Image 1 (spheres, rainbow, N blue to C red):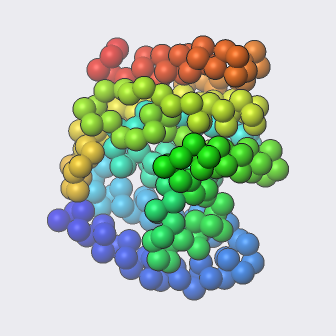
Image 2: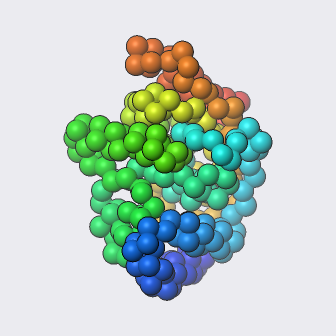
Image 3: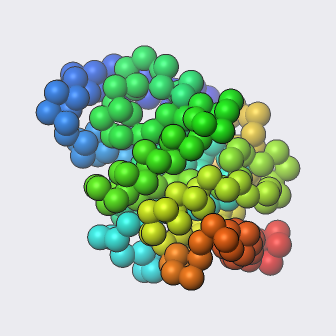
Length: 234
């Protein structure tokens, strides 16, 4: 029932937001969309009965640019990261999401990046575009290095794409450990349980000393840091 109520709320917000999206698209205004989106996520969290406990936020400087890398337990992870971090993070999304009516234009104004996951070329082009946005506009990015949600609650292998993004743009990676969201809404589930999601933001890892030559060492460091904050591995 709570999930259906949330869907109804989001449909209403999407319809009411149409004039705002049009105006923001004309004038290239991003932050009104960010405010509406963040408010919608907060309302959704309250409707679903989801609490968030975050530690380590004091390690994040609001005026700095980062690549945030959390584990991916649930569909709840992305929206939750948007409301706990001070930066308005951009994301790289599969291109199919950009076919959603109404939202497509809003995502384009917000400079979210579509990617075709069927080939390596699409991934490389998406990374290049994200690097330009980081360098030119100082955007932070949210990257799930596992690439997809876990099916069993365990941390999966990391993919390389997000690490190329951090190396090429020369911005620190913030490892993030998420606990509890898998139990509330595992992959394949449509409904969300009430409960608490616990998030630990680790110290940012600067890219100095890392390159493509020792990419595996960087990936191992971020993987082990994320793993160290997962309760079932503690």
